[in-house]
Length: 327
Image (cartoon, rainbow, N blue to C red; front, side, top):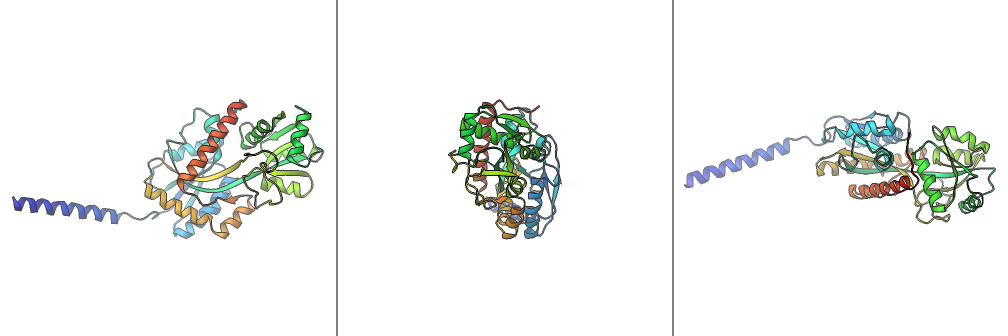
């Protein structure tokens, strides 16, 4: 009996040592290039943010990170492809609020579930918008805009970059909270909307800081406020919407990193740490500022997830209340 017991002990010990050897034999992430799917076109905001951040991550890790643009259907095609990738850390998704907080409420037949098919990893950056008005409008503050719109219901036109876009949702949320009525004029991008806004054919536009502020600084348009919760370091002279008479109004386009579902917690933590370190570097912050984007404040993966879910719930309410849809 002692011989059998001892033999079993040896076998058990050998098995344990074998398992330990296998664990130690596994290479640390990353030991080969990492693919980063960006579900939007090259040279767009998400692509530029991805390249700035992943370049620093790659330098810190000593391993290449390859940005792979997979645009289409408002970012949902590339996102669906990322959902089907192995959860081994060698395919990441760097995306925005569009694919995880907005599209699920506009496109009920998505090929992915933002909650079930992904693991949130890291909040990377935020891009606030700026509320612009045409110079012919006799208002200089958000309060004056609300008063004018109430006194002239339906007479103001607001431009957007299309139905269901963040620009559309920002304005819908503003209209609802301010209790004003304006007419929606959708364009295929804010770049096409700007000339009509300058000419006074439209009156209101929530645009991104990097594209909108140059027109305001040149005197072609008037900037009233930023949509972020706090004043933007990129335009500190502008008040927030909340400061301007709309308490609680806050909207940014966030950028974040996801892994496919079932990624091991240790791997999620490792990748989170790599991106968090990169985002906090002064060089990355300076590069993002040139794009009109601010580095995300330090947060955990769980905090990032909570922020996304709150964002998703808010946009779901706006979309439902205003019966917003996309053709």
